[in-house]
Length: 373
Ligand SMILES: Nc1ncnc2c1ncn2[C@@H]1O[C@H](COP(=O)(O)OP(=O)(O)OP(=O)(O)O)[C@@H](O)[C@H]1O
Image 1 (spheres, rainbow, N blue to C red):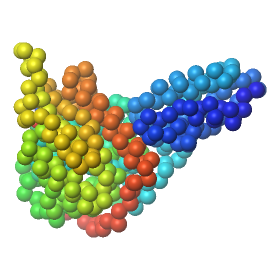
Image 2 (image 1 turned 90 degrees about the vertical axis):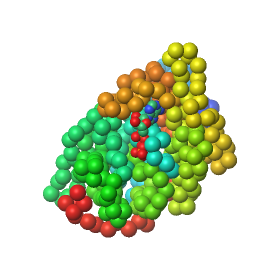
Image 3 (image 1 turned 180 degrees about the vertical axis):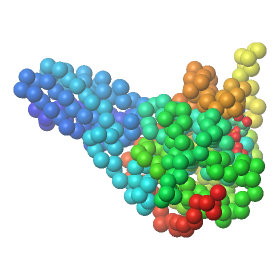
Image 4 (image 1 turned 60 degrees about the vertical axis):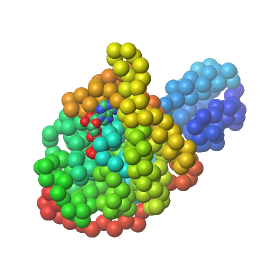
């Protein structure tokens, strides 16, 4: 008869390659059931449903259980806030954010580097990997997420002035500034007004249960962006850049901005890294090369990946369907999927390092929604 101790000892040989600990140490193994006939079942409660190696874990554990002498072995994959465990309570002050496990800022020191394109594709890739994803388009200078996801509806506003996000492709919950303001007026909003709008969107949206809420930041590192980082209970940030020197200098500023308020940057994403000529098939570095790596090395922030300059990426943005969904096997589609995987791992590592700031003492100045629109 197999015992629980034997099972735990045997399963402690399964290492999480990203967290550098075994799955028993990490507390992933739960609810071990052993029938008198030797049928074994257990739950493997992972940090995120989008864990890129979940199937490998399952196969490895089932094979170990069979080797131990189980008559049958069933490993049920679960995520921490799934049916087995209640949410690990990230302590966000706001009731409506309670179901949100992680808030990730997507920023760029400079406009036009493809931050919104990356946000839309990262969100879709995370969703395709099995995570529940929300996107808040807080780019006051040019909100475009509604176009990138092909929606023109507005969120429902409830009598208590809370909002329901719009569900877009991939089941992603989206709220975009563009849903409330005529886009040509967006750029002339005054700073304080814009920052209050953002507070409303963060704190008044019924986000529900989300594994990742991505916030598409306005480009730059000015007062508005800094205020935003202080107002949103960010778990971490990723910074998007191109390999150009001028963009890299701004990327440094972006990383420094998050650092100054204690928000960890989990990675750099280099967009428009290269172009593959469809005639000769050669890779061309339009904006030079190696810049992302240099910054990554210098500042100790990992590179999450490089996305090529591909006409289909721009077309997909205009057509309202992120490239990772429409062309998953294209060079950029694969790059976005890989970046999502690395982002999941980087955030999991951050969480297991205990270095997570889930709670900011931000001020939330209430303003009526109708005033803000
Ligand atoms: N990898 C890519 N390949 C081809 N086109 C791209 C790529 N990334 C972004 N683009 C295009 O570049 C333009 C700028 O992208 P996007 O709007 O995402 O940038 P941004 O950094 O969010 O800009 P801003 O912050 O100024 O709003 C868009 O037309 C987009 O379709």
